[in-house]
Amino acid sequence: MPNVTSNGIQIEYDTFGDRSSSALLLIAGNGAQLLFWDAEFCELLAKTGLFVIRFDNRDAGLSTKFDEAGVPDIMAAIKAAMEDKHVAAAYSMDDMADDCVGLLDALHIEKAHICGASMGGMIAQVVAYRHPQRVLSLISIMSNTGNPHLPQGQPDAIAAVVAPPPSERKAYIEHNMNVWRKIWSPGFPFEEKRARTYLEKSYDRSYYPQGMARQNIAILSRGDRTASLSSIKAPTLVIHGSGDPLIPVEAGKDTARVIPGANLLIIDGMGHDFPTGVWSEIVTAISRHIKKATPPILA
View 1 (cartoon, rainbow, N blue to C red):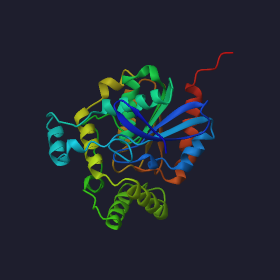
View 2: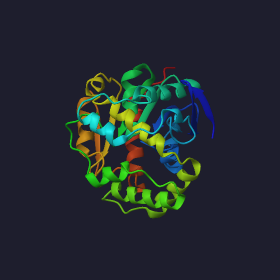
View 3: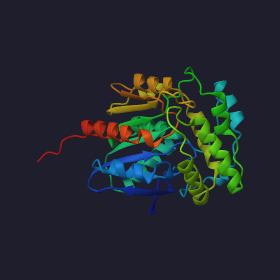
View 4: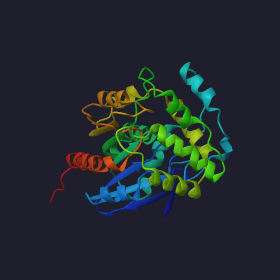
């Protein structure tokens, strides 16, 4: 896969579709690599007439790592955030949003549709209000506004996600299979083979849990983004699962409420994941949203 140097770091990326089509930038969630966006899913999006870009966030996959920052104390940071105290971070969500724009710069893309899932949705939101001139539209999936008063995720799901993973390959895969089962869509059958294959590929490509910890701190240090989100003018689509155990559906409703004119799609039975059973609905929703948001080409 290719990479570029931008915003002071190396960013690993991959593309699908025609370079001359409208660009759709996909931003992965906490600790996830670009593999989070299945190649088959990206191909479906590309077939709707999009130039699809997926990439590794900083501190994940094959993009630049921040080893010199050390491994943060997640529980101490959570406690500080809950007490409304300062949370020191190696980098900010603003930095991660700037990475996205830096990648667009390197690819000579003036404007793009920005789509993110979970933490990726938070980063996409920051891109939309921090770099509005670069955003054709925003798609925020299973994400939130940082509002501390919203319902929290199920304790067992949160505990599974923040628990340190083992370093040995087999143990790591079994640990994360358990995590996937905790956050999986209750309305869809668990995809054992797909989940295991994804985890094997992720481990072999880049085992790097300390990056996930630092990304978590970046989220905690940013806090409530509500005020900034209210300034977003880009056409926005919010997608959330009704059965999300990690970031409850109320967070999606809050996101759509805060961003002016946002449309909300709640997918019945979807959790904090992308079961193949929802791909068609999500691809169709994104395609329709983008077509409405894309300005006509003048002759």
